[in-house]
Image (cartoon, helix red, strand yellow):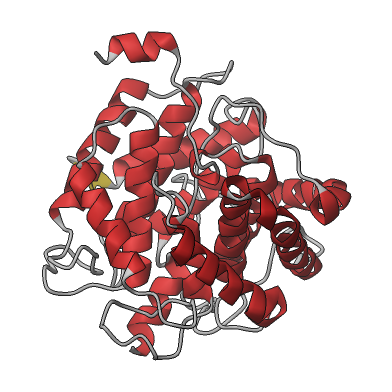
Length: 374
């Protein structure tokens, strides 16, 4: 697999997104017990991000498109009115940076990978557009232009799907594919569809099927679809596949139950010591929330799993409010703590479920929006 895949895992945390117009469900059990600590830590992290934003509106270093997208998603997920106040100004400045990094919906490539930046930026802008439909304070952006960029960006993603149904790191890889790239692309497509932006449904279904075919007999998922069901399953990668497949309209209970058993068997404690702990915990908690939403019998176990992950993430926060870079390859030579802090703050917002992909069923669009798009 090599270093290329591990860099994809670093970036493919992809992401989630903006508020849905629904009243967010309140967390219960062990997660509810740590609500105050979780929200306070999240705010300290967002304050750190606001203070450490670059003049051009970006965050991050080598992969500023992906990291800025994660940061914008974190800002969107943390508040009922994310476009208000000083935090709203930082969010809009970050979005302006993202808009400047694309031409006709295609975002610039950074480093070895293009699809992660393309997917995360599409996801962030899609969720911004969707969130703007429900918030009282609107962003100081041309939202029609944002919508047009998302519509163009999902077409670019579709055009670069491989023959297998997955995606590769760079454009045009019709014979190449792997899981983290596919997760990033699929979640962007789901988000756009949630907000009434046209996507190719066949492309989305092929992406879901690709991920399902990566499942091994132990319930975990392989790096890529290779018809080898007895190879060692990924831990963090399984969490990402679970969080993505849980967004399917037609829930595949057999696939998801086996995957859930795999994650609970390895436990969050194991993921905390793996190569990509923020990635694994983000998707693990997201996946468990979506599984519990579909199957009530899983709620208690899902809540316990998430609480254990949150506990570890909270313990890593530094005195200045940031989170340290942890895991393999990630270092100050490639990225800044904006990467880990964006991930951590986004992860801590999952219980409020303000992002569209944190919910199995998206909210109905306002009537004015439905009429305007007919």
